[in-house]
Length: 244
Image (cartoon, rainbow, N blue to C red; front, side, top):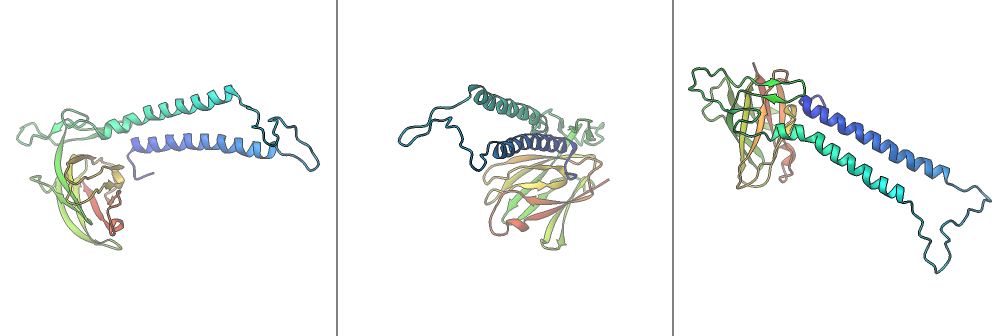
């Protein structure tokens, strides 16, 4: 999962750990019982359920097993929900004084940029953020840098194998962007692969997506649509370029 930020990579590895542990236990249990509780040729098994024609089988249960089978998965679900809160909170932080502060004030004499920092837990915080716009449409993306300087944000097009001509969005490393998004037709979802982020773009409604461009990010990556949006959904792509 090298295309993810550390916080989402940690979440992925944690879920994989529990999937392997629970899957190993469940399938190990099934494997053991499938081969352990079998009859051999000539053996007559005891009729523990008192099965006979025309009579309901004996009610044969184990309350301790049923309680454990209910309580333990419940505890695991609660834990995984709690563990997922940190990346979700980072992804949906407030635009007014949240992890990325407020929109950058370019007229402030003390303004030095958004200067984002990735902490040891994978959370990225910023002094401020820049606003850009993204529009989804069957079947391409439109990027608008608004009034940002070209060093902070630039757009263009490029021809890529399979995808044809695609839009290009160029952003600066160490800066954080808030993408204000909308769709002119159906639901889309820009997936910025190397940022590990995506958010639905809805017709008739504005949604937002944080794009914290961290220093160690790969310089070129893809932007794909993560919501099926029609015939050319698979080639609805763009390119993200980041630079110093």
